[in-house]
Length: 221
Length: 126
Image (cartoon, rainbow over all chains, first blue to last red; front, side, top):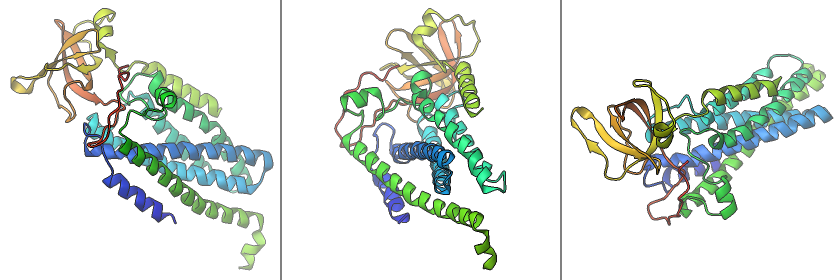
Protein backbone atom coordinates (compact mmCIF):
# COMPACT_ATOMS: atom_id res chain seq x y z
CA UNK A 1 0.00 0.00 0.00
CA UNK A 2 2.94 2.29 0.64
CA UNK A 3 4.70 1.74 -2.67
CA UNK A 4 1.62 2.27 -4.87
CA UNK A 5 1.12 5.99 -4.19
CA UNK A 6 4.90 6.45 -3.95
CA UNK A 7 5.46 5.09 -7.45
CA UNK A 8 2.52 6.99 -8.97
CA UNK A 9 3.81 10.18 -7.33
CA UNK A 10 7.34 9.71 -8.68
CA UNK A 11 5.91 8.94 -12.13
CA UNK A 12 3.71 12.02 -12.36
CA UNK A 13 6.52 14.17 -10.96
CA UNK A 14 8.86 12.82 -13.65
CA UNK A 15 6.43 13.13 -16.55
CA UNK A 16 4.33 16.08 -15.41
CA UNK A 17 4.21 19.54 -16.99
CA UNK A 18 6.90 22.06 -16.12
CA UNK A 19 7.50 25.81 -16.14
CA UNK A 20 8.90 26.83 -19.53
CA UNK A 21 11.18 29.53 -18.12
CA UNK A 22 12.77 27.30 -15.50
CA UNK A 23 12.77 24.14 -17.61
CA UNK A 24 12.71 20.49 -16.57
CA UNK A 25 14.02 21.15 -13.07
CA UNK A 26 10.83 22.96 -12.11
CA UNK A 27 9.24 19.50 -11.89
CA UNK A 28 10.93 19.41 -8.50
CA UNK A 29 7.93 21.52 -7.48
CA UNK A 30 5.97 18.25 -7.23
CA UNK A 31 8.45 16.96 -4.66
CA UNK A 32 9.49 20.13 -2.87
CA UNK A 33 6.05 21.58 -2.11
CA UNK A 34 3.96 18.47 -1.20
CA UNK A 35 6.70 17.04 1.02
CA UNK A 36 7.06 20.22 3.04
CA UNK A 37 3.28 20.60 3.39
CA UNK A 38 2.95 17.04 4.64
CA UNK A 39 5.92 17.59 6.95
CA UNK A 40 4.00 20.54 8.43
CA UNK A 41 0.93 18.32 8.73
CA UNK A 42 2.94 15.55 10.38
CA UNK A 43 4.50 17.93 12.92
CA UNK A 44 1.10 19.44 13.66
CA UNK A 45 -0.21 15.93 14.35
CA UNK A 46 2.84 15.27 16.53
CA UNK A 47 1.89 18.40 18.46
CA UNK A 48 -1.72 17.28 18.92
CA UNK A 49 -0.82 13.72 19.94
CA UNK A 50 1.94 14.91 22.28
CA UNK A 51 -0.57 17.14 24.00
CA UNK A 52 -3.09 14.27 24.19
CA UNK A 53 -0.42 11.98 25.62
CA UNK A 54 0.43 14.40 28.39
CA UNK A 55 -3.25 14.80 29.26
CA UNK A 56 -4.43 11.20 28.94
CA UNK A 57 -1.18 9.25 29.41
CA UNK A 58 -2.37 6.74 26.84
CA UNK A 59 0.56 5.03 25.03
CA UNK A 60 -1.47 5.10 21.81
CA UNK A 61 -0.96 8.86 21.57
CA UNK A 62 2.78 8.58 22.11
CA UNK A 63 3.03 6.03 19.28
CA UNK A 64 1.07 8.33 17.02
CA UNK A 65 3.16 11.38 17.92
CA UNK A 66 6.42 9.52 17.25
CA UNK A 67 5.18 7.98 14.00
CA UNK A 68 4.22 11.40 12.65
CA UNK A 69 7.53 12.92 13.73
CA UNK A 70 9.48 10.17 11.95
CA UNK A 71 7.50 10.62 8.77
CA UNK A 72 7.86 14.39 9.11
CA UNK A 73 11.64 14.10 9.31
CA UNK A 74 11.72 11.98 6.15
CA UNK A 75 9.63 14.58 4.31
CA UNK A 76 11.71 17.48 5.66
CA UNK A 77 14.86 15.81 4.35
CA UNK A 78 13.09 15.24 1.00
CA UNK A 79 12.05 18.86 0.71
CA UNK A 80 15.55 20.09 1.58
CA UNK A 81 17.19 17.84 -1.02
CA UNK A 82 14.63 18.67 -3.73
CA UNK A 83 14.85 22.37 -2.92
CA UNK A 84 18.62 22.34 -2.93
CA UNK A 85 18.84 20.70 -6.37
CA UNK A 86 16.15 23.04 -7.68
CA UNK A 87 18.06 26.01 -6.27
CA UNK A 88 21.25 24.87 -7.94
CA UNK A 89 19.62 24.89 -11.36
CA UNK A 90 17.53 28.06 -11.01
CA UNK A 91 19.20 30.38 -8.49
CA UNK A 92 22.67 29.07 -9.25
CA UNK A 93 23.51 27.73 -5.79
CA UNK A 94 22.72 24.70 -3.60
CA UNK A 95 22.12 26.76 -0.49
CA UNK A 96 21.78 30.43 0.49
CA UNK A 97 23.03 30.97 4.02
CA UNK A 98 21.29 34.32 4.41
CA UNK A 99 17.85 33.05 3.48
CA UNK A 100 15.47 32.88 6.44
CA UNK A 101 13.28 30.13 5.01
CA UNK A 102 16.22 27.87 4.20
CA UNK A 103 17.85 28.32 7.59
CA UNK A 104 14.59 27.90 9.48
CA UNK A 105 13.84 24.67 7.60
CA UNK A 106 17.26 23.37 8.58
CA UNK A 107 16.50 24.27 12.21
CA UNK A 108 13.10 22.57 11.90
CA UNK A 109 14.86 19.39 10.82
CA UNK A 110 17.35 19.64 13.70
CA UNK A 111 14.58 20.12 16.28
CA UNK A 112 12.74 17.00 15.11
CA UNK A 113 15.96 15.03 14.84
CA UNK A 114 16.34 16.11 18.46
CA UNK A 115 12.84 14.76 19.11
CA UNK A 116 13.85 11.40 17.64
CA UNK A 117 17.14 11.43 19.56
CA UNK A 118 15.25 12.18 22.79
CA UNK A 119 13.61 8.78 22.41
CA UNK A 120 16.90 7.09 23.28
CA UNK A 121 17.91 9.27 26.23
CA UNK A 122 16.08 7.19 28.79
CA UNK A 123 15.33 3.49 29.13
CA UNK A 124 12.06 4.17 30.86
CA UNK A 125 9.54 4.48 28.05
CA UNK A 126 7.09 6.51 30.11
CA UNK A 127 9.70 9.12 30.96
CA UNK A 128 10.88 9.14 27.35
CA UNK A 129 7.35 9.70 26.09
CA UNK A 130 6.84 12.53 28.54
CA UNK A 131 10.11 14.25 27.63
CA UNK A 132 9.67 14.00 23.89
CA UNK A 133 6.07 15.21 24.19
CA UNK A 134 7.43 18.59 25.28
CA UNK A 135 9.61 18.82 22.18
CA UNK A 136 6.65 17.76 20.07
CA UNK A 137 4.54 20.52 21.62
CA UNK A 138 7.03 23.38 21.39
CA UNK A 139 8.47 22.37 18.02
CA UNK A 140 5.23 23.26 16.24
CA UNK A 141 5.80 26.99 16.83
CA UNK A 142 8.28 26.93 13.97
CA UNK A 143 5.64 26.17 11.35
CA UNK A 144 3.89 29.58 11.31
CA UNK A 145 7.29 31.31 11.49
CA UNK A 146 8.42 29.28 8.50
CA UNK A 147 5.26 29.97 6.56
CA UNK A 148 5.55 33.73 6.96
CA UNK A 149 9.34 33.81 6.64
CA UNK A 150 9.20 34.70 2.93
CA UNK A 151 6.93 37.65 3.71
CA UNK A 152 8.74 38.91 6.81
CA UNK A 153 12.28 38.69 5.47
CA UNK A 154 13.24 39.74 1.98
CA UNK A 155 15.43 37.09 0.44
CA UNK A 156 15.96 34.67 -2.41
CA UNK A 157 13.18 32.16 -1.81
CA UNK A 158 10.09 32.96 -3.89
CA UNK A 159 6.77 33.89 -2.34
CA UNK A 160 4.09 31.28 -1.83
CA UNK A 161 2.07 30.48 -4.96
CA UNK A 162 -0.87 28.61 -3.45
CA UNK A 163 -1.00 29.55 0.23
CA UNK A 164 -0.54 33.27 -0.41
CA UNK A 165 -3.08 35.85 0.59
CA UNK A 166 -3.63 36.81 -3.03
CA UNK A 167 -4.26 33.26 -4.23
CA UNK A 168 -6.49 32.41 -1.31
CA UNK A 169 -8.59 35.56 -1.67
CA UNK A 170 -8.91 35.56 -5.49
CA UNK A 171 -8.78 31.80 -6.05
CA UNK A 172 -6.38 32.43 -8.93
CA UNK A 173 -3.01 30.73 -8.49
CA UNK A 174 -0.11 32.16 -10.52
CA UNK A 175 0.20 28.77 -12.18
CA UNK A 176 -0.95 27.06 -15.33
CA UNK A 177 -3.90 24.82 -14.57
CA UNK A 178 -2.09 21.63 -15.65
CA UNK A 179 0.79 22.39 -13.27
CA UNK A 180 -1.66 23.18 -10.49
CA UNK A 181 -3.60 19.95 -11.03
CA UNK A 182 -0.40 17.87 -11.04
CA UNK A 183 0.72 19.61 -7.85
CA UNK A 184 -2.56 18.94 -6.07
CA UNK A 185 -2.54 15.27 -7.13
CA UNK A 186 1.03 15.06 -5.80
CA UNK A 187 -0.12 16.49 -2.48
CA UNK A 188 -2.82 13.83 -2.31
CA UNK A 189 -0.37 11.03 -3.11
CA UNK A 190 2.19 12.26 -0.59
CA UNK A 191 -0.59 12.35 2.00
CA UNK A 192 -1.24 8.66 1.27
CA UNK A 193 2.49 7.90 1.48
CA UNK A 194 2.53 9.65 4.84
CA UNK A 195 -0.46 7.70 6.12
CA UNK A 196 1.04 4.32 5.23
CA UNK A 197 4.53 5.29 6.35
CA UNK A 198 3.37 6.53 9.75
CA UNK A 199 1.25 3.40 10.14
CA UNK A 200 4.39 1.28 9.86
CA UNK A 201 6.28 3.47 12.30
CA UNK A 202 3.38 3.31 14.70
CA UNK A 203 3.36 -0.48 14.67
CA UNK A 204 7.03 -0.48 15.78
CA UNK A 205 6.37 1.83 18.72
CA UNK A 206 3.22 -0.04 19.70
CA UNK A 207 5.38 -3.13 20.03
CA UNK A 208 7.86 -1.29 22.26
CA UNK A 209 5.02 -0.10 24.46
CA UNK A 210 3.57 -3.59 24.62
CA UNK A 211 6.92 -4.99 25.76
CA UNK A 212 7.23 -2.19 28.28
CA UNK A 213 3.78 -2.59 29.75
CA UNK A 214 3.71 -6.39 29.65
CA UNK A 215 7.27 -7.53 30.36
CA UNK A 216 6.09 -11.08 31.22
CA UNK A 217 5.01 -11.83 27.70
CA UNK A 218 8.55 -11.24 26.57
CA UNK A 219 10.16 -13.51 29.16
CA UNK A 220 7.81 -16.36 28.31
CA UNK A 221 8.91 -16.29 24.71
CA UNK B 1 12.71 26.47 27.30
CA UNK B 2 11.85 25.07 23.89
CA UNK B 3 9.88 28.18 23.00
CA UNK B 4 12.71 30.42 24.18
CA UNK B 5 15.23 28.55 22.09
CA UNK B 6 13.17 28.65 18.91
CA UNK B 7 12.23 32.29 19.35
CA UNK B 8 15.83 33.20 20.14
CA UNK B 9 17.11 31.40 17.04
CA UNK B 10 14.47 33.05 14.86
CA UNK B 11 15.24 36.51 16.19
CA UNK B 12 18.93 35.92 15.71
CA UNK B 13 18.41 34.96 12.09
CA UNK B 14 15.99 37.82 11.58
CA UNK B 15 18.28 40.48 13.00
CA UNK B 16 21.32 39.29 11.09
CA UNK B 17 19.55 38.92 7.79
CA UNK B 18 16.52 41.13 7.91
CA UNK B 19 17.48 42.45 4.51
CA UNK B 20 19.31 39.99 2.37
CA UNK B 21 19.72 42.48 -0.47
CA UNK B 22 19.02 46.14 -1.25
CA UNK B 23 16.70 47.27 -4.02
CA UNK B 24 18.08 49.67 -6.61
CA UNK B 25 16.02 52.53 -5.17
CA UNK B 26 17.40 51.92 -1.70
CA UNK B 27 20.90 51.70 -3.10
CA UNK B 28 20.70 54.99 -5.00
CA UNK B 29 18.67 57.11 -2.61
CA UNK B 30 19.38 56.27 0.98
CA UNK B 31 22.31 53.92 1.13
CA UNK B 32 25.64 55.21 2.34
CA UNK B 33 28.17 52.74 1.11
CA UNK B 34 31.71 53.76 0.51
CA UNK B 35 33.48 52.52 -2.56
CA UNK B 36 34.62 48.91 -2.33
CA UNK B 37 32.23 48.04 0.49
CA UNK B 38 30.50 44.86 -0.58
CA UNK B 39 26.73 44.74 -0.57
CA UNK B 40 24.02 42.64 -2.17
CA UNK B 41 21.86 44.36 -4.76
CA UNK B 42 18.65 42.98 -6.21
CA UNK B 43 16.45 43.94 -9.14
CA UNK B 44 15.02 42.91 -12.49
CA UNK B 45 17.21 42.79 -15.59
CA UNK B 46 16.22 45.56 -18.01
CA UNK B 47 15.07 44.72 -21.52
CA UNK B 48 17.71 45.09 -24.26
CA UNK B 49 20.38 45.99 -21.75
CA UNK B 50 22.44 42.78 -21.70
CA UNK B 51 25.75 43.21 -23.43
CA UNK B 52 28.51 40.59 -23.57
CA UNK B 53 31.86 42.33 -23.42
CA UNK B 54 35.35 41.01 -23.85
CA UNK B 55 37.08 39.05 -21.08
CA UNK B 56 33.81 37.34 -20.15
CA UNK B 57 32.32 40.47 -18.64
CA UNK B 58 28.55 40.89 -18.93
CA UNK B 59 27.13 44.36 -18.67
CA UNK B 60 23.45 45.10 -18.07
CA UNK B 61 21.05 47.30 -16.12
CA UNK B 62 18.84 46.20 -13.26
CA UNK B 63 15.82 48.06 -11.98
CA UNK B 64 13.12 47.84 -9.35
CA UNK B 65 10.78 49.92 -11.47
CA UNK B 66 12.06 53.27 -10.21
CA UNK B 67 15.83 53.43 -10.28
CA UNK B 68 18.14 51.59 -12.63
CA UNK B 69 21.76 50.74 -12.00
CA UNK B 70 24.45 49.67 -14.42
CA UNK B 71 26.02 46.32 -13.60
CA UNK B 72 29.45 45.12 -14.60
CA UNK B 73 29.39 41.38 -13.98
CA UNK B 74 32.41 39.13 -14.07
CA UNK B 75 31.55 35.66 -12.83
CA UNK B 76 29.43 32.57 -13.32
CA UNK B 77 26.21 33.43 -15.12
CA UNK B 78 23.36 31.09 -14.07
CA UNK B 79 21.51 29.47 -16.94
CA UNK B 80 18.26 31.25 -16.10
CA UNK B 81 19.81 34.71 -16.41
CA UNK B 82 17.79 36.67 -18.99
CA UNK B 83 15.83 39.85 -19.54
CA UNK B 84 13.21 40.71 -16.94
CA UNK B 85 14.52 38.03 -14.57
CA UNK B 86 15.07 38.95 -10.93
CA UNK B 87 18.72 38.77 -9.88
CA UNK B 88 20.65 39.32 -6.66
CA UNK B 89 24.22 40.49 -7.15
CA UNK B 90 27.05 40.58 -4.65
CA UNK B 91 29.57 43.33 -5.31
CA UNK B 92 30.49 46.99 -4.82
CA UNK B 93 29.88 50.44 -6.30
CA UNK B 94 32.56 52.32 -8.18
CA UNK B 95 31.75 55.57 -9.99
CA UNK B 96 28.05 54.77 -10.10
CA UNK B 97 28.58 51.34 -11.65
CA UNK B 98 28.02 48.19 -9.61
CA UNK B 99 30.83 45.67 -10.00
CA UNK B 100 29.81 42.14 -9.17
CA UNK B 101 31.22 38.64 -9.46
CA UNK B 102 28.46 36.65 -7.78
CA UNK B 103 24.92 36.29 -9.10
CA UNK B 104 21.80 34.52 -7.86
CA UNK B 105 18.73 34.32 -10.01
CA UNK B 106 15.59 35.01 -8.01
CA UNK B 107 12.74 33.26 -9.71
CA UNK B 108 9.21 34.44 -9.02
CA UNK B 109 6.32 32.24 -7.91
CA UNK B 110 4.76 31.87 -11.36
CA UNK B 111 4.66 28.48 -13.05
CA UNK B 112 3.56 28.55 -16.67
CA UNK B 113 3.63 25.32 -18.65
CA UNK B 114 4.17 24.86 -22.37
CA UNK B 115 0.54 24.45 -23.39
CA UNK B 116 -1.04 25.81 -20.26
CA UNK B 117 -3.02 28.98 -19.91
CA UNK B 118 -1.34 31.96 -18.33
CA UNK B 119 -2.42 34.14 -15.49
CA UNK B 120 -1.86 37.84 -15.20
CA UNK B 121 0.19 38.45 -12.12
CA UNK B 122 1.73 41.88 -11.75
CA UNK B 123 2.45 41.96 -8.09
CA UNK B 124 5.42 39.72 -7.54
CA UNK B 125 7.98 42.50 -7.34
CA UNK B 126 8.64 43.06 -3.70
